[in-house]
Length: 199
Figure 1 (tube, one colour):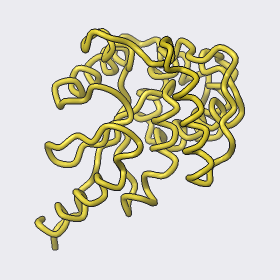
Figure 2 (cartoon, one colour; figure 1 turned 135 degrees about the vertical axis):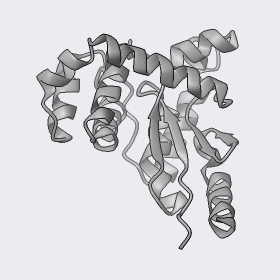
Figure 3 (cartoon, helix red, strand yellow; figure 1 turned 180 degrees about the horizontal axis):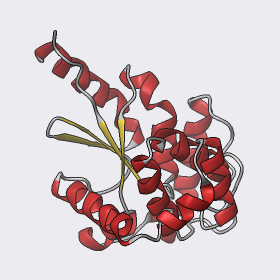
């Protein structure tokens, strides 16, 4: 019996587009993707330019994200006062959560606290609450996020994503093909279905 093909969904917890993708990916793809954390700031440095959040396109893009959330049936976007925030610790916590088998639940909890409730992902209190929601020991997570091995793993995952062709988030990888953007989920779903038929 052939095994269903899994999509990898690369994300950074600071990205509202990644929030949209994580919330609806399982429904669109037909199965839950494998979440893969990366550090978006490092991708920005590699590609040579940064985020639209720091450009003249910010107002246009935030309005589009709000429209998409409404169209997808998600709660209204509540923009954090300090967005984009420093998400380095949050992403290291995501790596630690993955090591402890709770990345999906942790990531969703952080995303919802951030973009549905306006929380600051640089806040340890937000991360602790997300850890509890994911069934994790929050204090152990924050301590673990400072471990050299966790820091190195996040760098490694980011480097691997770059080598795979990821230039932003969310990106879905199906086989060797990378689909960039939450609006590419439907195309990725078609690729998953085709790969499943060929497996």
